[in-house]
Amino acid sequence: MATTLFTQNTIACIWDFDKTLIPEYMQLPLFRRYGLDEAVFWAETNKLAEHYQQRGYHLAPEIAYLNHLLTYVLAGPLKGLSNKILLECGQEIKFYAGLPQFFDRAKSFARERPEYRKHEIALEHYVVSTGLAPMIRGSAIAPFIDGIWACEFIENPLQPGFLRQKELPIEAAAEIAQIGMVIDNTTKTRAIFEINKGTNKNSAIDVNAKMAAEDRRIPFQNMIYIADGPSDVPSFSVVKGNGGKAYAVYNPTKPDEFAQNDRLRQSSRIDHYGPADYTESSSTAQWLRLHIHQICDRIVADREIAVKAKASQPPRHLTATPEEEALRRAGHAPSQASFLDEP
Image (cartoon, rainbow, N blue to C red; front, side, top):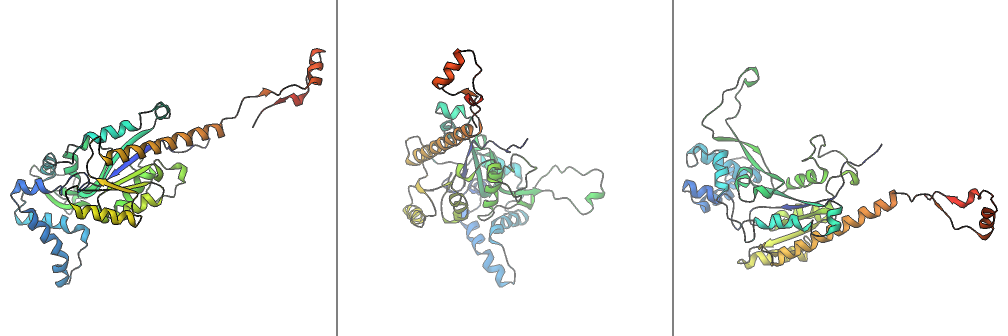
């Protein structure tokens, strides 16, 4: 018997991280721990492509800062940097007002009304970031997140000939040495499609596989993408262009970020924007609550229409004509036309 893969009663809030959930770059606690000048690191990173081009090399911008971190490890300033240290540094990340409490409160929005609970609507949070996954996992927001897409490093890379070894040595002194995963502003859209199709919940589903709309776990119209600016335009476009909502946030202390978001709104890149303030009375929290409720209302309406369309009415008697009623009283069997099984 044919069936759909998912019930499609899940809502996804998909979040950028730096400048969206936190006012600074997440690497700040790492630089503080090692006594490094953050401004110098980012200035060097921004000049890498230009300097390498002069030497005849082409550097992909999305891996520039990851490579430069590894150079700092090899050269000594970040000697001994491990995923464990990154996890510990994540504990020092400072969030915007209202976080992480808002994440739990947002999940409760999908349970606020009886009809939402009747249809078992649930809300999930995902972080899709160009930052470092171990730091996000170590942060205060981690317990509230249902999935993370971000950059990762490999410690103690496997050496040539490892396939011929029966036992591999366990290195006690771990240090990051290779890039394991890269997420940039373009590949963020792949993560969104993985959430859409349910690849993250069912590994048998390939993100490139063709899937009917009704078989996708979280339809785009059940998504809200929240980020801070122009670098997220590809993700804004994917979600908004397919019926979801796109919301931009800005640091209330920086007028240029407000202007930047206003330009995004005027060019129809986003649906709306507001301050990166997630306290209960903030305009951002209220906008998200309103639109989560609107998605819930649509899910309820769609599911109830589907029930009516697919569940047939039981057989029933039509109202008898006077002639048929007279025959019945006289003891004659009613006409076959008196009964209908409605479609």
